[in-house]
Image 1 (cartoon, one colour):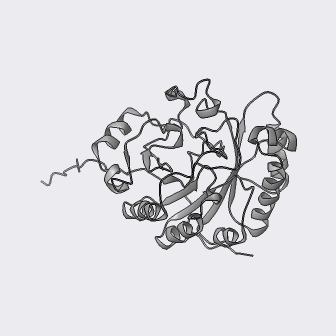
Image 2 (tube, one colour):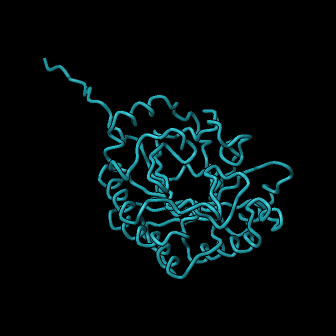
Image 3 (cartoon, helix red, strand yellow):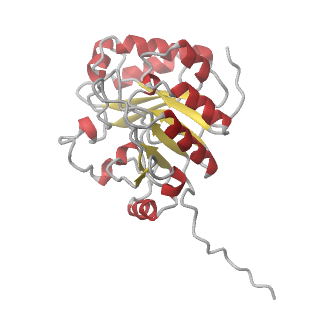
Length: 294
């Protein structure tokens, strides 16, 4: 009689991880009232170099994580964004760029308009004045809406997150406006009490404010190279890619120990299934399918 032997080998430290959030810069042209990363016009880009980020992309591909998200701050303000998109595509990774879409230069449109690349953004209200008050950027509503229309015109896959801050915010009207444009992938979530949305930004966030997929489905790398589970769990640092390669951080004891302390998400209600640009922890895997480019 043959006895089946069950494989008792330990799970891979990256098993289940769908994407890595690469915070290319802490700098942002906006200063959203709820930003969990405290990004803004006076925040520096960070110490990570293009070569550092290329090493991160290499490691993402090497360990078998299928996708990378380039975020910030505002990633379009990083000169490394376009070459990193090309570098990631060249390594077989799906790419998402999470931008406020206030400024998209011609070379970036060319990079976004490729198979395997998608875009995500945040939108707060159909009322320009209300939207601009939330983002802290005069005219941001008009620029973001214009570029949402341009993304749709080009046929680039797009998802939009709406974060409900309360106080009469026109979330329902904003969603209706976007759906009237033909946009289908829209997620709504409550504001998370982290960063500027917290009563005290220096206080460690409560676990209930975390994305619920930290460490189990997400990895994040900060503008200074720190590694944590997602941008909402930046207080749970497990290493730094400027001194230790990402692949080694993910296979190290600190990552494993921290991962074990974070409860897995029990539902699909994870930011952004919401999608604020300051809480994009639920980046979907992007299938590398061919699409028509205009």
